[in-house]
Image: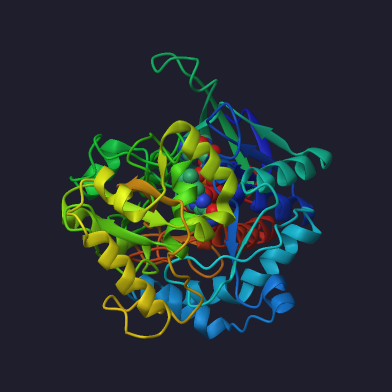
Length: 471
Ligand SMILES: Cc1cc2nc3c(=O)[nH]c(=O)nc-3n(C[C@H](O)[C@H](O)[C@H](O)COP(=O)(O)OP(=O)(O)OC[C@H]3O[C@@H](n4cnc5c(N)ncnc54)[C@H](O)[C@@H]3O)c2cc1C
């Protein structure tokens, strides 16, 4: 039995939106709560995300008369995931998605832009964006609520291991204080007892080069990632050590909108994601031809780029670029996006065979006008626009590691499942550290929704848990 330095009813590890959603629910249910975060700032990948959340039948769809359904949302997620997704978890996510968005509006007071996006793999426009176009909106709102309620969110605290009892149940956590500044050889360790339960919400491992290469050796240090520096696997490994079942670990998603000319997520990804892919085309500069349905899911688009063996060019016209004017201006200033008065100039600057790009765009525009069928199966009747208005914008694209679909197995109550097929007592998990929801490919804006849905369930369940026998 370790010496316990501290106690709390619910100990939450990770301060992204999954962890903070859990903390709010647990506190609201009357539990004392501590949130532990290894980095110096809170928020993880959530903080640097675009703040996109997807839900069928959400308030903006209703306002704009966009027809959607839970069944269609479910089918889109399962199709992208190649049906590897665990259906019971997807059903929960889909059913509670719109409620999760309402919760962020009513409880967190988060506001949204008056706009809906349709990203690749979604059959309709169902993605909302927080008011400042960043997940920091969610983190700031959730943190300030927790602060008002007196909940302690501690930074610089790395989860080192989960303490278990004779039955394998989680009793508490060992943490290294002052992580990032104490030095690996001399960490200050403390044990915190989780009277009712621990919630693992440590996010994904997109920036853990060793761990991701164990899953896919091709994803070495040469492959850039969009993730924050702390997106590493220690939390997941702590759960594996107490016999959590790993699910889908090798399904690592690459973002096809990665800008080849900058590191990390950067500015170009947003421009490509919000303007180029929905409103433009993706072209192989070697041939001057399109290579994929630009509304396909991320896996299909990334694979199409890799297949060419070189950076591809995303192209959009002035009309299509309008909706991400802010990121466009930043990208133009930094040289990540280049503007051309004509397609001929764009093609020449990208080394494309003369005349070919003009033909590609002509063909594309004819399919948008309904004269021909798209050879890549892009459903162009659903809101695509022709490329006609100069200037034409070009961005060089190469996929980056973006999201890790795999993680620990959970059930519908977010209990972590062990190798003996049973829930690990007193251990819950939510967010990107879990596996099974997105399968082979996650659709855009579906992670934050999932984190909120399952984070809330984890917090409610953890607070409702029976306290350990006193010791
Ligand atoms: C650039 C970018 C843009 C994105 N945009 C969107 C979007 O618009 N919509 C969408 O749905 N998804 C988006 N995603 C994906 C989404 O942001 C993440 O999947 C989601 O935020 C994960 O939330 P989380 O709470 O599970 O983990 P995180 O938000 O990553 O939080 C986990 C936290 O746990 C901490 N932690 C890790 N290990 C330990 C440990 N051992 N001890 C203590 N703390 C630990 C981490 O430091 C981190 O702060 C984006 C991702 C990126 C990188």
